[in-house]
Amino acid sequence: MTEYPYTKRNLLELPKEHYMYSAFSGESFLFAYSNNRKDFIERFFSRKYRFSYLFTKEVLKNSGCSIQSEYIESKTTNLEFADLLLDFLKKTKKSLNKELFIDEHILPLIKKFEVTKRIMSIEYSKENFIVYPMFANVLVRLCKNKFDVVLFNALLKINDICVSVFLSGQEELEEELLLTIISVRNELEIYNNFKETI
Image (cartoon, rainbow, N blue to C red):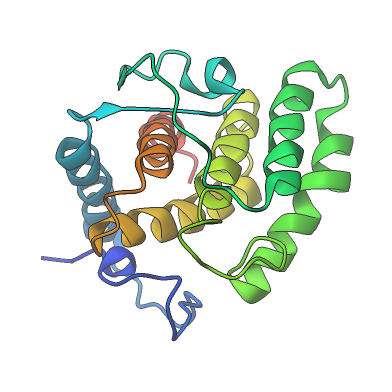
């Protein structure tokens, strides 16, 4: 039986995963991928989560997760990037020309990510990890509007990183975990809706 190899270790630690020269495993690989995501959701979904970000309504709508009403102080040190992603979420909702928005704002971030496996120039730490699940949720919003292979590929890889971090023991990052569950649930929904065209 094929295993899904990309979440077995923390992908933000060296060596970086480049997804190159992967053996073709066909449907068994897709089945393993789907099970990996479902197992992750089952493992972490039943917790209660506390959340502090202003875009809660934007991201958490219809999440199905239990959110405590109290807020906790944000751990994010890179608030400018958090603000940028919040702005992306708002613009994806309002933008009349989504292709132009994607070309000018999203694709440059994805290109940098594909080379460095980092979002912008941010090095991994618990304090700034939240930019990964935040960006995954931006990609979810864009993929739900219109399926795009490049955006979905980036979403898969960013969620691989997020899932790998939590499966390697970083469960105390509540906000990040909640955002990851939401992006992974949406990723699976997008995959299931479009798997006939993939």
